[in-house]
Amino acid sequence: MTESWYEVVSGNRLAQGDLLLNCPVPRIETYAYPLADMLDVCVDTHHLAVVSQSCDLENDKVDDVLLAAVLDYRELTEREGRGNPYIRGRNWRKAAIRGDLASFSLLPVREEPPAFAWSLVDFHHLFTLPKRFRRAVR
Image 1 (cartoon, rainbow, N blue to C red):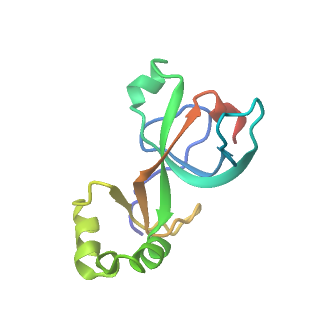
Image 2 (cartoon, rainbow, N blue to C red):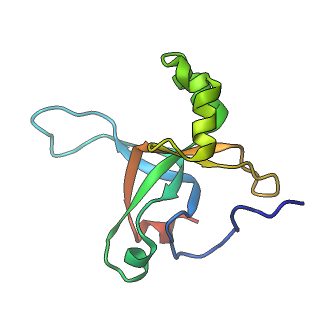
């Protein structure tokens, strides 16, 4: 059995690199100018990786947590590869393994619960949530 690349934790404390699976993220549905007093908001769920620095989170130096989307490797390469064949190629895969893609960070597969497919942290898709939001999401 191989050693896990991460450990499962519980509680409300966050650290850089933590993964929040199926995390609800509010999104403004429509925009119009001038902005109305009321906005339509929907809630999407995403797998997210904490990008904020652990020391800032621990020492209450930030109120909001910076998060990056975590995408299934196979789904990402199929979707993005349609418009960019390089992403579906061997050289892109090798660059991801070496850590040479500044916009992505590769997360290896995890077979034991919670199982996790080969994935990429996508720094093109960023979100912020209030730090206290974590207490409401279990």
